[in-house]
Length: 363
Image (tube, rainbow, N blue to C red; front, top):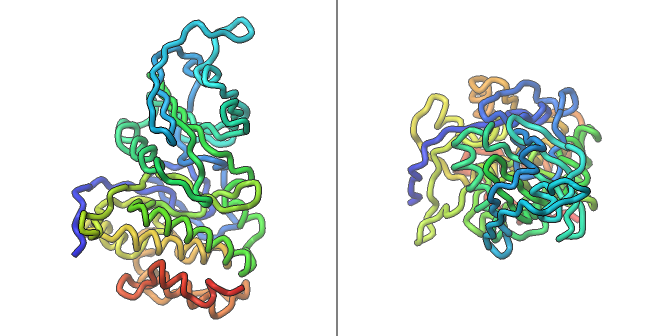
């Protein structure tokens, strides 16, 4: 039998595919139409978008911890003698990174395009204010995010290069996804043709199958957390709510008691556990699968299957038969697969069943 996690923190994020993702973890949103809402943050090349950073800290000469994910080494430096153009180098310049324009902002972080001399290319730099960020984020979720991506290497995951920490800021250096979020991409096109949606859905399932094989659950899969690189390859980002070590030594699932993610992407078992709070834990692997089904629906129909603006209405609708809009036209085979994923837990498709589905394998 699955075992139950002792984690009891309740957290949720933006509930809507088309709403501006401020990443305020307790904010609910409104419209479920992908085309009629505002999206303020361009979430390119980032794991999670929180907060802000000032240039004063970029020039700080405080002790700096540098973590390279691939080698897992930590280097402590305190160099106050490096100069460029007659002024002290910033912390990032000291590490061969030149910052460019802002591409995303949040409550306590911002994301900038940068150029890394070490990697010889443009990167995304997420700058997190330790002063503005809640203590729980900096002590719990941020370390968990960094730890979760260590050792994860897959073509459909954003590449995390290194983190640099000062007394006031944390800098995350990551791959830059040139073509923005899946959210913006679908909004621009109104909806995706089935063949295109199927190709991206396969990539999403490949990423999810991979992280699950590493005993990592994401717990915040949504269109805002899927990016497209320069070749329009899908990249799963934002491991701020992810968990490692999700199975016991005898491979039993460790159930979760944390409400993570977005109302509109949350599985019925999550919603039932927290509205009202019952203390009932859920299988985070199967909840990730549910969220993938919501993404698939959003791609081919251009809207979300469930409106996350009112959780009580959502609870009623999520337990009713899944409804499909008349337009755009979507094949019965595609609808059937989505129906098997957005289904009660006992009959919900798992990853092997999805991979065996005729629509999923259609040429």
